[in-house]
Image (cartoon, rainbow, N blue to C red):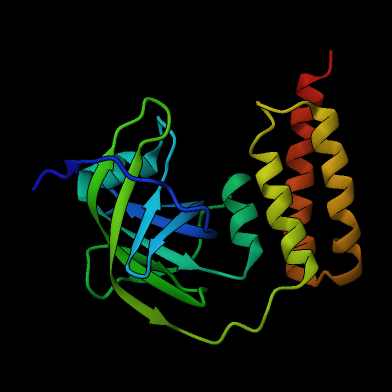
Length: 200
């Protein structure tokens, strides 16, 4: 069934997640993405055009939302490290992160078209809790913020990004574990590479 088009007001509640989609041949694609929580059983995903996430969701009309506290996966996806262990979803044709606290399996209900970021309104059809959430530390927050900043290297001035990263580093140095330090290192390597490319 082709999704209907409708207008929707985007909620201000955003959760940073890992979205896994797959194409019609079953090949999985992993991407960090903020989802908008519209209702208890409804979310909005806003992938950019063009993107594999968008293409896959339009083709299969399903996705898996992973609620994950391993920030290496967020940083890894931005730095070319996308080979993370997966297993099959339970109620839809899809894949779930092996290392996730919980996941929701969703189906595409409708679309609000946009030339840059169409809104994909999705219904949660199944949610599974795999293990308890033990709380974030400041280093995890720092890595997530750094990942968002690094993803915007083509949009924001290097000086602004560098200033924000310097601030994030304060929390990182006080609270980081091995996972956070590894993820931060990946992001800083990419930032240094991009900064060098943009420097005359």
